[in-house]
Structure formats: structure tokens, C-alpha cells
Amino acid sequence: MDINTFIEKLEVEFEELEQGTLKPDTNFRNIDEWSSMYALIIIALIDTEYEVVVTGEDLSKIETVQELYDLVKLRLN
Amino acid sequence: MSVFSVENKTILITGASSGIGAETARLLAENGATLVLSGRNKEKLNEVLQQLPTQEHQVISADLTHEEELEALVAQCPNLDGIVHSAGIVRPFPVKFIGHKQINQLFSINYSGPTVLTGRLFRTKKINAGASIVFMSSISSKFPHKGGALYSGTKAALNSFSKTIALEYASQRIRSNVISAAMVKTPLFDEAQKAISKEMMDKHGEQYPLGFGTPEDISNTMLFLLSDASRWITGTEIVMDGGLTAGQ
Image (cartoon, each protein chain N blue to C red):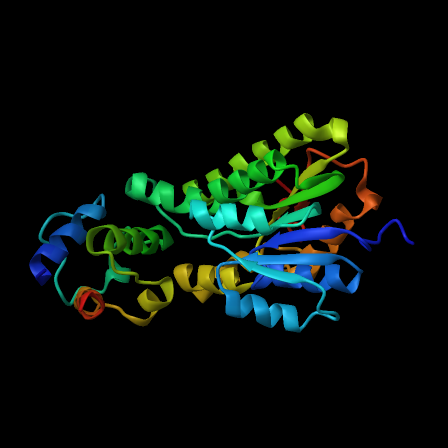
């Protein structure tokens, strides 16, 4: 797993996001279409793709795509 | 003896190690019932047992998703006058992430466990005439939420199962009902809060005219449903939601 494939997977889940807009330092809450539903989607995505459990509480403590990636990577090991 | 008493009744409680199951155990024991406490965690079940006023109850730990453990529970179980099915999990999955794995995960614990157990107990004639069966269900079976397709599906399926028992066993005066609860402050509540964040949970709570429920609120209704005071109630659903759906 590397951050680029991680970002690609994440980007696909946002219906209105143009490819290539998401960067490691993007604050995912600032994405235009962000809603509580996306928290559920991110949690389910990480669960199905990496079999890693991330909670809503975890998400509330982080802001950027990089931080999310780091968290998943940490729990993968 | 009051018609609201459960004295001399033997009652099996699944999911008895915490939350609604544990609180129901306490209240039923206080009111004279003899209990069979079941759940996955033997240690936690023994802790619940030790807090009961007398110790004439038994603990039979079992993971109901394992056929052999379920069969062992059925074999060891005495004849029953009541069953409280409170074992269950909550796990949100948006529609596009639902696969066979997720379906199996939720349905095996929330649906197959309680239904197969009940079926086996009937087959082995362990459920006495006049017994009362109660399933923990959820208002989400009628009012689903985002990410809740599977969870609310398991509960809707339980509602139908319970009604079918009511029809099939009325001749033996065996009753079956569900309690459809909204958010109750249990370990599952904490888990759900972790999954969706405290902020969202607080916002959800503002919609409850009477606030979130407590395990005691539910166990009071359990006691009523397991006692003979509710002898004309079967195949139905008691909604306990602090008024959440009153205006819907």
C-alpha cells in the first residue's frame, strides 16, 4: 500500500470529486460534498479494502488524507 | 403473588453479560425468577451472576454462531418459562459496501443465532406451555438510517420471526413479542457513538422528547412481558423510543 493508491481509492468514493484533486494535505472535511455519510463510507472502505477498523471517533481526531493514511498503515502492521 | 411477578419462572437470557441483558437479569432475579445466563464471555457472565441477590442461577456460555456451542446450550438448558433474546451487534455499512461477508456477519449474530436457538428449544420441548419469548428489536426496522440497511434488516426479520412464533404456538399459550427500542445507553451505544462520533450522537439525542433510554427502561418492560400480566399480548411490538417517532 502506498499513499497514491490510497488516494485513488478514496477519490473514487466521492461522486463529484475530479480525479487528481485529492492531495495528502487535503482536509477531507473541506471537500464540498463532505457529509456525515462520508464518514461511514470511509470507515467501510477501509474495512473492506484493508480489513482495518477505523472508528468515527478516530476520524474526528484527524483532518488530512495523510493522517488517515498513516492511521491505516499503523493498524495494518 | 402479584400477576406482575416472575416467581417460579425459569428464564434464559442471551447477551446477558452486559447492557440490556445484564440489567434484565438483575431485575428478573430480584423479582423471583431463576435464570440461565448466556453469552460469549464466561467471565463477564459470572460477574453478572455474582451481583444477583441469590446464586441459584446458572451460567452457560455459548457463541450462538457456532453450531456445537448452540447445541450444547440447548442440551444443558432446563425447561423454560421465558426467553430474553438480547444478543446482538451494530455495524454500519453503506449500501455500496454490502457484500456476502457483511451480510453473514450481521445476520449470523443478530438473526440466525436467536432464531435457530429458539427453533432448537421448541424441537427439544424445552419451552413450557404459557412461556413468554421476547426479542430485542429496534425502531430502525421501520425507520432505517444511513448505513443501517443490514442492522435494520436483521431486526425486521426478527419481527417477522416473532409474529410467526405467536401464530404457531398460541395453542400452547406461548407468547412472542419484540421490544423495538431507539438508542439506549449500553455498551452498544458507546460503540455506535465511536462509529459515528459524539457530535452526531448528541445531535441525534436532541430529537428524543424524553432523551435517550437506559437499560432499566427496557428491563421494566421485559419484566412485564415475561410476567402473566401480559398474557393477552402476543405477536406484537412494543415501541420504546422516548417519543422519537411520535411525530412521524
